[in-house]
Image (cartoon, rainbow, N blue to C red):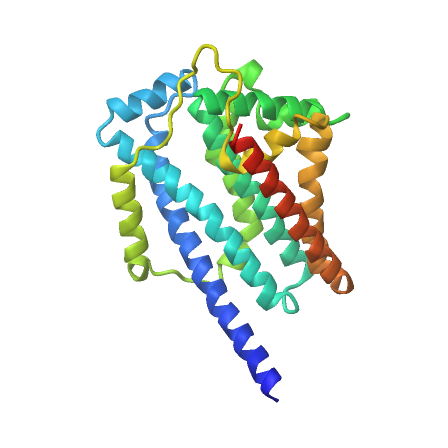
Length: 287
C-alpha cells in the first residue's frame, strides 16, 4: 500500500513537472517568435553577415532583439527536452502511438530550427555549420540532392532557402507535430514574469554570439548541440555520422512509445547514446 502511494505521488509530481517544463518552453517560444519577427523585418538573406552586423550596430536596440531571440530559442529547446522526458515518464501509457510519434518528430524539427538560426548568421560558426550540413545531406544515397535542395541549397541560393525554412517551413512542421498536444493547454504569460524578466535582463547584458572568420584558424567549433556530431565526423563517413547515428536515437524514442515490452532496453540505449554523444561533445569542445 505504501509503495502504491509513493508511486502515485511520483507520477503526480511528474505531471506537475511536465506541465511546468511545457509552460516554460511555450513562454520561451513566444519570446523567440516575437523577437524573430522583429529580426526578420531587418534581415537580408542576400547579405547575411553584413545584415546581422548591421542589426547589432545600427538597428534600434538591434543587439537586444538578436540576443533575446538567440537565448530564448536555446531555452525553448532545452525546456522542450525536459517536457518531453516528463511526458514520457508520466503519460506513456495514455498517449496514443500516433501522438507520441508526432511529439518525437517535433524534436528534430526544433533542432533544425535552432541549427538554421546559426547558419543564417553566416559568421565563422554559421558558415562552417552550413557547409557541413550540405555535405552530410548530399552524402545520403538517392535522396541526398533533393533533400539538400529542399532544406539548404546554400551553394546555389545562398541563405534564401535556409531563411525560408527557418521562417516558415520548419516552424509549420513543428506546429503540425505539436498542435494536438498544444491545443489542450493555456499558458498565462503573467505567471512566468520572472522567467521573462531574466531573459530580458540577460539579453540586455550579454550579446548573442557573432564570430567573424579568422585567418589561420583550421578548427571552428559548431553550435553546442552540434559538437558531438562534428567530432564523430572525424572518424566516420558523413552519411553514418550525420544521418544514421542521429536517426538511431530518434527511432529508439519512437519505438519507446510503440513497443511497451521493449521500453527498458530502448531506454538504456537512449541513455548510452546520450552519454556517448556528450563525451564526443566534450572532446570536441576541448580541441
